[in-house]
Image (tube, rainbow, N blue to C red):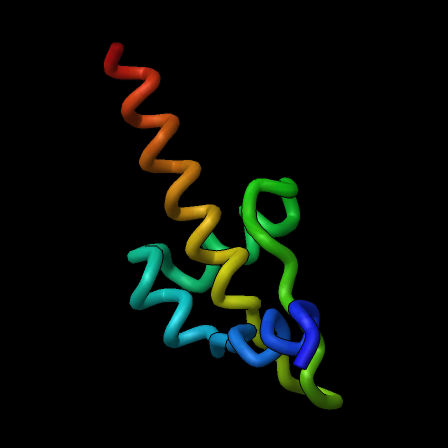
Length: 73
């Protein structure tokens, strides 16, 4: 198995309720932040279904934590 194969196996898609639970943001704020390019874009997973890549959401959370730390210095 190549490295790219193993990387894909680690990817996980999150639905809106999971993103809300992880970020603490309401649905309307998530979509506003997407519109303003302040939040990861969703991935279409069906005709009327979207999800988010878990690693992108975790990176967004980590960036916010880092920004908080740098703003406190």
